[in-house]
Length: 193
Ligand code: SF4
Image 1 (cartoon, rainbow, N blue to C red):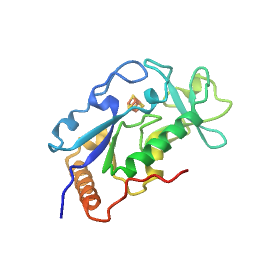
Image 2: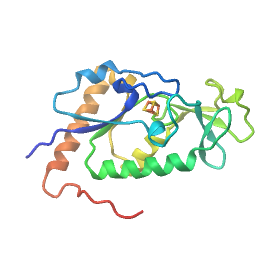
Image 3: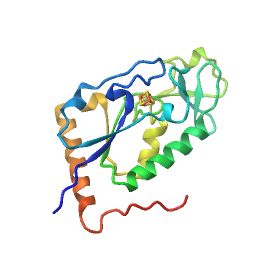
Image 4: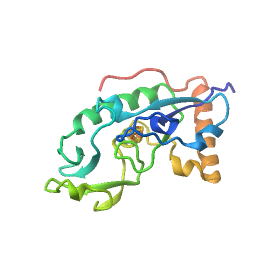
């Protein structure tokens, strides 16, 4: 069997980039210990759609579906973010990405641990962390990755620090990269939406 070095997509702030809403980064020490030869591809959906850094805080709001709002102005980024994330996720999956390391609890990158707020009448104050009506949502980027490939291994930065969870994730990503290197693996083609 031929081998291909796995490619992981990683939330950019975890790689030390100062791209968070407040201009900070969240370097993830566990990333430093990844096997050599693995390719890390950084994505910051909030920067990439043009929100700017620093930028106003945003939140996931449940109002006629899940929406992405700036908490103070209520500017709605839903359509822009969904389009970009779905487009990029389909490209990366078609190109053979083997897994994703995502920032926990981010309204964009969080995976199953994002606070979701009720809309549309919520005041800016009620969109403060801790006031959500549930805390198990996906961020828009994580959701797009799941939609593009429900089997894509996903892990957050906190889980990556747990040896057993980390080992299982890396094994899944390695197996996936090996499968893609086999003849007849996924083609690098994206059909029109
Ligand atoms: S959590 Fe995601 S959207 Fe937020 S700064 Fe990090 S990479 Fe960007």
